[in-house]
Length: 202
Ligand SMILES: Nc1ncnc2c1ncn2[C@@H]1O[C@H](COP(=O)(O)OP(=O)(O)O)[C@@H](O)[C@H]1O
Ligand SMILES: [Mg+2]
Image (cartoon, rainbow, N blue to C red):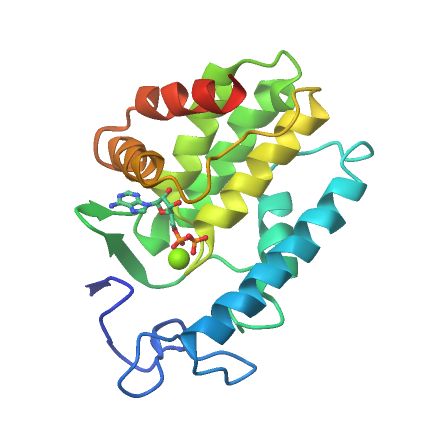
């Protein structure tokens, strides 16, 4: 069954919510959304510091790194952290890759990004393409957006590009970002995301 964040289905850990809530069952048993958001915020901050520190020494920017980021980010909170999801999910009109295809799709991602030498010859177009591939695959149960953004920031830093600036809290940008993600998932079109990345580097 395809589910979104708000629907309860089955007893799989990736689909277990606390009663009468939209909060996924977590290791810390946090059942207050604000508190969970705060924990995740702090965990993301620590994860960013941790991966920025050794970006220079890093060679491969692939599914292994993506999983490592997700594990460090959400490992304290969720049993499924660092692992590809096994349930189908959708957001709005977008249904992300079916879980049974995720390993093969990520292997393809690894081959393609390696072939591009992890963007040594950097271009925003290539970055937009790979970012949109990851958004369409949506490899994890939750936290894909934050994990993919950090992965892309690391790719940029490694290739001397500085960090992409996403205007946090800007509702117009947020809408545009969702629309660009939709274009990636529904039409396999990375151009709207490319436009946003251009703004982020402008
Ligand atoms: N309607 C949509 N269609 C396609 N992609 C979407 C849609 N809404 C959100 N997204 C994408 O999903 C990401 C959020 O995924 P999610 O797993 O919830 O990560 P996080 O919890 O870190 O925000 C967004 O950053 C965006 O790229
Ligand atoms: Mg989310």
